[in-house]
Length: 399
Image (tube, rainbow, N blue to C red; front, top):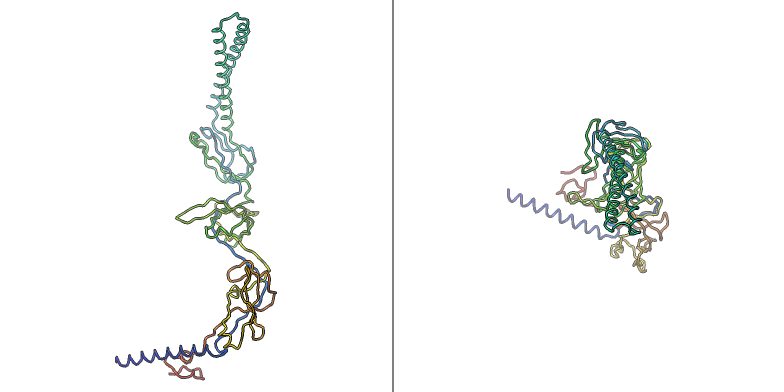
C-alpha cells in the first residue's frame, strides 16, 4: 500500500512540473502568450466623495431663559408654536419683585431728599467759607455730608435700575421669529437663577433652512472645502435624497475613543419641513466633480514596455527618448509594429481613472497593458489531474 501511495505522489509531482514547463514554454513562443490591450481616450465624469454621519439642526437656535428666580405664573405658548420677535412666552410671579420695587422707590426718594438738603447746605457753607465767616472744620463737615448723601443717592439709583430690569425679566418674550421646539417648564414650577440661567424655551428661527453638522474623519478632512456639493439621507425618509452645500469646515478637532474628527457644517434647504431637528444624516460630500473631461485608465500611465517580450511578439520600440519631462507623464501608442511614447499632461485622478489635460485627443488609442492569457494546459483541459494526453474531442471526461 505504501509503495502504491509513493507512486501516486511521484506521478502527481511529475504532472505539476510538466504543466509548469508547458506554460513557460508557451509564453516564450512568439505571440503565443502575450497580447497588447489598448483603450480609447474618452470623455467621462470624474468624482470623488467622502462619507460621514451628522445631525440635522436648525441654522439659528436660541435658548430662552430668565435671570431672576421665582415661580412660573403663566405660560402662553406650547411645543411647535409659531412665535414672533417680542411675543409674550411666559410670565413669572411678580409679587415679590413689585414689593422690592416699591421698597427701593422709597429708599430712592429718601436718599434724594437727603442729597438735595446736603447739597444746599454745602453750597451755603462754601459761600461762607470763601468769606471766612465759618471755620474750616464746619466747611469740611458740610462737604463730607454732601458727598456721603450723593453716594447714597447714586447707589439707590443703580439699585432701582436693577430692580426695574428684574421686573422686566419676569415677563419672558421671544428674542426672534421662529418655532418653539422645546418647552422645559410648566406653570407653577419654581426656577432658580442663582448660579446659571435656566432654559425655559428653545426656539428655532426657520425650519425651512436647516443645516447638518457632520463629523468627518481626519483622513478625509483635507479634501473637504467650502462650496462642495453634498447629498444625504435620513432614516425617517429612506427613499429621499436631500441636497446641500458645505458652508464651513471647523478647525477644532474632536477626539472620541482615539478617533479624531472635524465638524463640517452643511446647509440644507427644507421646503417640505421633512427634516426635523435631531435626525441622524448619512452624508456624502463630493470632493471632486469634473464632468465631460478627457480621461484614461491610470494603469496606462504605469505601462513600461519590455523589449524582449515585444521582440517575441515581432514588435519593437521607437528609437526616441521615452523619459517624461518634469511634470509630465508617458503613455504608449502602437503604430504598425512599433510602440511609440507620447508625452501627456495629467490632471486630477479618481479611483482608477486620470484626467488628461494635454497630449491626447478624444478617440485616440493608447496601450493599457501587456496581458498574458492562460496558456493551453493539457492536464487541466483534459478533465483530470493525472491525464497526460490531449483533451478528448467529444467533450467527455475520460477515465
